[in-house]
Length: 146
Figure 1 (cartoon, rainbow, N blue to C red):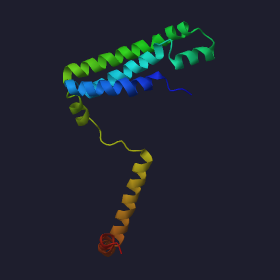
Figure 2: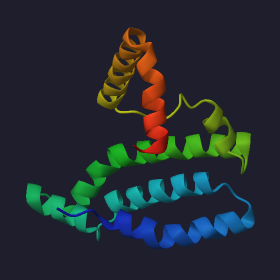
Figure 3: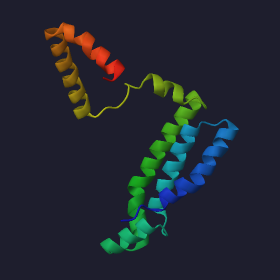
Figure 4: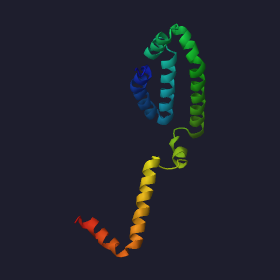
């Protein structure tokens, strides 16, 4: 399995561009989005990309035909990313993080972890309701480590 030259581009050129963006006062979040979008577009549409050549060889088509077919989905996805990043940069400028932080629903949790944690809290509350005197001794035991 190959991961493509997009990872190489993002990991080398992208790191430098993020530093330049920070020095210029440009939003690093938008820069990261632009670097990743451009890297993946280049990976899909470059006739010398290893994933493009490998895929074309595996399905038995010419590389230029494969690139033309990849363009049908890659270019619209790139344009959508471009428009979203352009709107974010025009509306928020370098402070693109502020509205994202306020609209976030909170930390992402795995459903199973949340259910187990809720179940543990319910069981602890039930035990506390049945044995209120044990709460003080359990709290003291946790603090002293005995």
